[in-house]
Length: 109
Length: 119
Image 1 (cartoon, chains in turn yellow, red):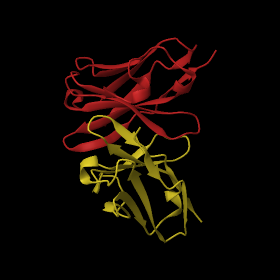
Image 2: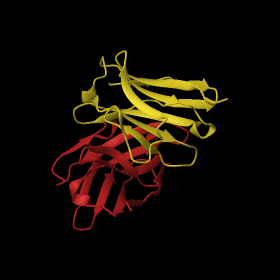
Image 3: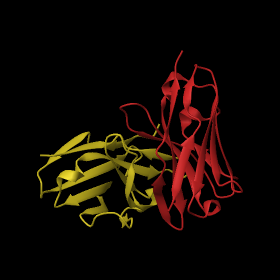
């Protein structure tokens, strides 16, 4: 069974920079996994942030960026704002089905 | 404006069946893959199933294979999820998602419909 692993929780100071990662139990994450990133706040549906590794949706703030880093997919937030406190999920493609990571709870403190 | 509105959720006993629907509007429905994603109370997101533009190709997560069926009616701009042999662990909010089209992925989500499997 394929497992996608994210940091359970991270804390960042306002104005700081933080990188969330997304690893696959099958090995190195490449662009062929079409990494997607989503933000979810309590009581809301998820909101798409990044698709195909590094592409932003029209509504994605410039401070969010996606990349591949050390064999994983990565989401970097630069100049973090209090409103960025949320749960973040990655999603990877496995040639048919897709699999979500367990999510990272980001605290801005 | 893209809109995805789910319906059909509710309370069902273990072993029972339920059919979810998703009404799509504001875009060319027949040109997109569509997906279902679920979230159990207090838990993370789970990708459930997807279906291609014509409804001829579909994929499922392992735990629902043989129990769930995904289908679509492009004439009605509607997506469906038929859920049979429901288990307590299928309890979740089910989201309808526009998952792929024109090189863009997972950009639009419905607000979800709650399915509760309990005796």
